[in-house]
Length: 342
Image (tube, rainbow, N blue to C red):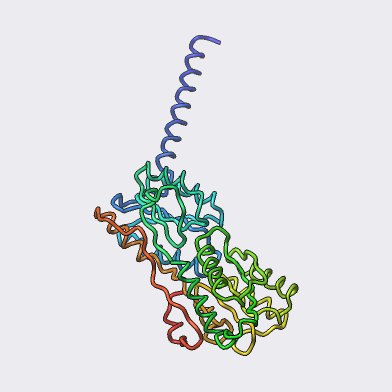
């Protein structure tokens, strides 16, 4: 091969490498990024949810999405963790890498957040907890919490149970047998609602949990647990089904229906539930669910208000509880239910 041929081949190779590099750089620059936006003035909020396992969870997601729109000066990056804490931790680290302005998270469980929250703090990104709270070694790792007072919710449920059975309460020898379908163990909702029931048991000598298991806040697990309780105990030995959310209550009712067991005002079995989504309120109005305690998912405006103050350099409260109430059939109307957003 002549020197001229070698020079020609080298020149062609260099041109080819230069062309590939140019194309690669061009593709890299045009690759989409979650934080890229035509308007660089938008405030970017990263939002991590446990999932979309219930109508309640979807309502919370919609409330946040409606609150942080481009018209209001925000870009929202939404992540669904598929009910796994590891995914939520990964979501937060992704938000940090993307350089978002604020992180909002509804934590699956209370513990296990110290490290990743420390990373967010080191990056100068405020973390706002919504829905369920967290337990961390240093509360300065997050800026604020917006959500429910789950212990207060449980206390409302215990009060409603007292009212449902107040005629039999003077007879302390007559047991009140409770099937307890717990929520996701370790979540603040489960901890608060379970703790309130435990206190209620301490205050009433005749109250007794005769069957207890974790329903994971799902209809399928609620149905499974109720079916096992029926098989083990028999309907005649069940007075109350204490479900820690509506999905579990729907599952419990499905199991009762399949077994041909009646429940409600004309039966000894009463169902007590949390969340108060519209479908459950209709059932409560009709007497199928005896008591409903609201867990308000419309938290977007509360979070928006906090972030607005933070953007202005203003102090915000560490804890903000959303407004909630409880219901029985006597306190509900079709018009009231129809006017609700969830």
